[in-house]
Image 1 (cartoon, rainbow, N blue to C red):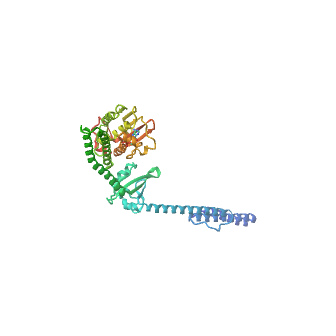
Image 2: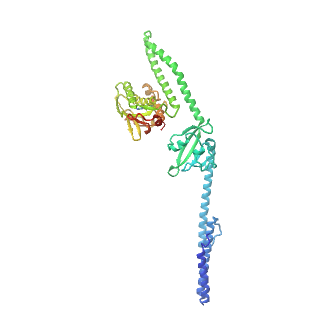
Image 3: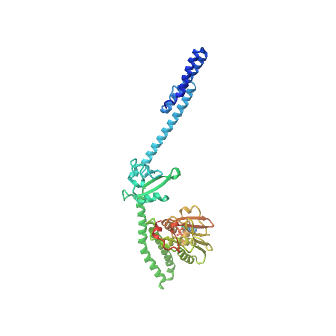
Length: 445
Ligand code: ADP
């Protein structure tokens, strides 16, 4: 207790005692007696108040026996509060301990960063995967301790929708997937989660190589078969009854060839997350050529309209973009009945260049939309095959857009039509009158 905190009250009691004596001497014993009783009463209150203050300040436990009367009630109530607070604190400590134990047993690296990106806490796995030791590295910048390639840019970039996948700096044979989750006040703190994805990565690589090799191996024999079938069909010596099975064989070999070509395209797209060979692409011209082919495919059964900004070019990979545009436009023709309208719009919008391919065909039911870009996912397999579909078109579109940092969104109203929207990043836009822009800089933007 602060010295003198009860000095005033003590001085008051002392004055009362002196006044009692004076009254006694002045021949007023009754008044003196009353004042004495009051002074003693005040002294008692003061004592209990002082004792309570000391208990609270020294954080001592208030335990029975409690004084009688009102002070007893006060002591009991404060004792109850103390007990409740103690239990709360114990619960909190237990929870904290359990949380730490759980976080320590997680095989993923967990690092908590404060607002200034300094390390606040890390679990033991963070040392093996990211080289962050806690508490030794507490207060240090994450990028100072963990020199993981690409981490600084990823942290500063602020876009954490996709994880950063890199070989661990500590051990190049480990593949890491690093995710960042902002949390706390105004989401300024960060939780960094590093996961060892070596096994999944290798499995993916094996799958990708297997598909690519199998497709490659199948291509040559298929070309030979297709060649013979074509020769036989063109030969005057081929007997008439054999022509129908031969033309069926030709159709099926063509279908297999398309599937193999699409599988090879997908494998190539999967090799890398970002598009290479970036250059200014004259997308209006590409659209025009694709639409010419789509008109041939439609054979005059569809009305195809264009709303294209002729000066709007795009920085990207020409063959990949062409493949994405043709898949979307051909789908709009293949999957809609004769008489349908198809519209292709290529416009510059504040958020970046946008390509929209819409139709007023049968549309896609909402339950199919989340899975429609998966390989071989088709709503009606038989109809897709009949229209020459491989089931890989939209998967290719999705990959191409991912590699261009673009987004694909699908809006459909069953019975009324579908609209596929490809939104490209603003940095990829290029106007025809501005062909001198440094494509390398833009490409990496
Ligand atoms: P496919 O080779 O079968 O066209 P895609 O991956 O390109 O494969 O498309 C997957 C499925 O999505 C198609 O089988 C079809 O059912 C549906 N689809 C694609 N585009 C449209 C569209 N414009 N209208 C209706 N359905 C569509």
